[in-house]
Image (cartoon, rainbow, N blue to C red):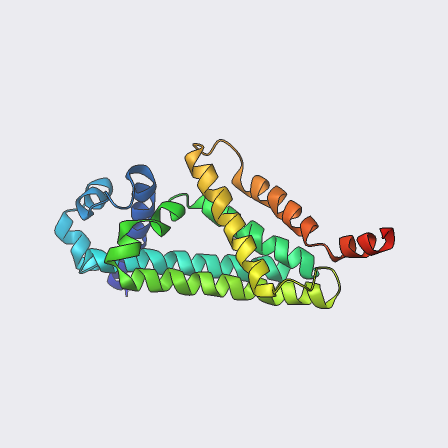
Length: 207
């Protein structure tokens, strides 16, 4: 049991180091030699835990997916009401990116887009899961009369996920010169104001 636990700990250490190095030197430039050197192992030792580089990246993706899904569930559980739940989901996503700054680079890497279909499938499923959570909350907001009903929940979810991606890219290109969660949530509030059903009521009264 102790040997098996040690192997699990080593795998976890390797995954953490891959994420750190992917942020430092880029996912497309990262090699197993880099990972082995950073941890103080031989390259064959890496392959004893992960038989291929693709398997290593898949483990990284699954680790990210597990943590994100846990973050989303916790965010929704702690929020009260659909508007707070929606903001909590967006905040959880932004906070996760700020904690794992390699994530945007991984999502646009050659490893993901071209070379590793299994990795792509994990992230595609992750995005679908996040959007389905958003859609459910958006429907609750529309049912309660707190959001425009002439826009489909799916389109609103796409707008919000695009907002997260856009501000994350700007954060990355801007040398992380601002607080990502705060800036993202500021723009979230702007977006929600534009979708506020009460504005329609006010417009009707002024006509």
